[in-house]
Image (cartoon, rainbow, N blue to C red; front, side):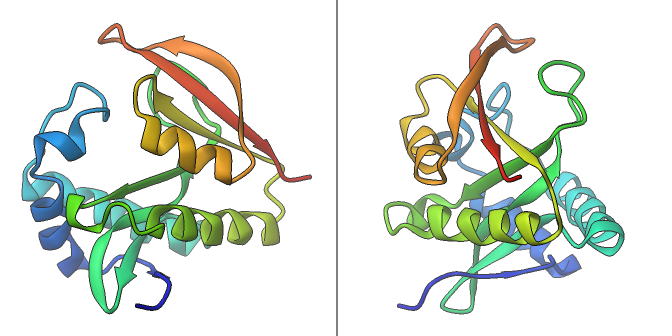
Length: 164
């Protein structure tokens, strides 16, 4: 297997994203854990396409051996709590792609794209207990800067990485 490839998501990627993330275990540490429908992912794909057109950064589709495995990339943290407006490095893979180092490799590529575009600082918001995502953040060189409480009451670590 080769390393993951990142590409700006295609409209058709809403289908595999919807299928990959229609899994309570995948969504366990994402917000309230809500499973979203295909329409949600169609909107997310379009927002990422628009973001990529404006900035060159987005939540890219992660391809593993040509197959959509999930997403990884850089996008603005848009929730009304936490580091609103900060650029977040984020990643999410379907469960069958876990444990191969794909999330770390894809996130590392996205961080390097952000660095090349002069982004000075990135955050990653990781719900406490999500040891796999915390490990990815640490492998990227991120450290916990703050702890937030989500609207659902979960403790969320704000990992930070200075790129400047």
